[in-house]
Image (cartoon, rainbow, N blue to C red; front, side, top):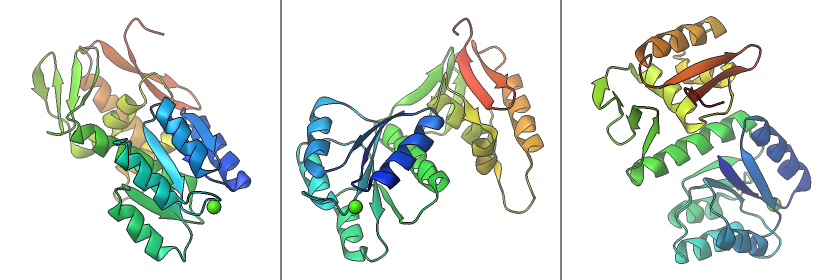
Amino acid sequence: MKLLIVEDDRDIASGLQRSLQRSGNAVEVRSDGRSALLALGVHEYDCIVLDLGLPDLDGTQVLRQMRHRNVQTPVVILSARDDTGDRVLGLDLGADDYVVKPFEVDELEARIRAVTRRALARRGDDLGAGSLRMSLAERRIYIGGHPVDFSPREFSVLECLLLRQGRVVGKRQLLELIDDRDSDPSEGAVELYVHRIRRKIEHSGCSIRTLRGFGYLLQVDGEN
Ligand code: CA
């Protein structure tokens, strides 16, 4: 995914940039509201991570202006603990979600994935590879036009791989998706899910590659 981080704290911004790049995203950083709006006029992003407290235009003003210009890119707000009023205003202005500082990068990444997915579903977009099509609105999977049964967790794992098609998804990230809190899922559980999904998508023209020590990658057969 292509992400824009708008954050004036250099340490937070560069830490976030590194982590999000490590998970396979293209990440740009802007440290004030005006340059963020300029970037939004030129590039299209899959998601914007927007700090509320910025030096010139604050986050809510950036949000207001971008929605005013009909930029509908999903936004996750970064908010300080005492920013409650602005956080509510941000959500009213059309932010999709927020995390409160200090936060775990994993949590932010999960929010980014969720809002991006919801935005795709709103647009009625499907995810696909080969003859496999995933309808996010129906939460169904079709191979060669025929519906194939997937359990909700198998669906989530495949969705994550499809959203990051051609890029490596770490085992830990997939582990979070199948964590049901009753049992103690292990990396072996991830392998089991991937094994089941592989069998179901066998004739779809795409497959899941294992990169030992890293994770998994979904690719269209014949592409490298
Ligand atoms: Ca700030």
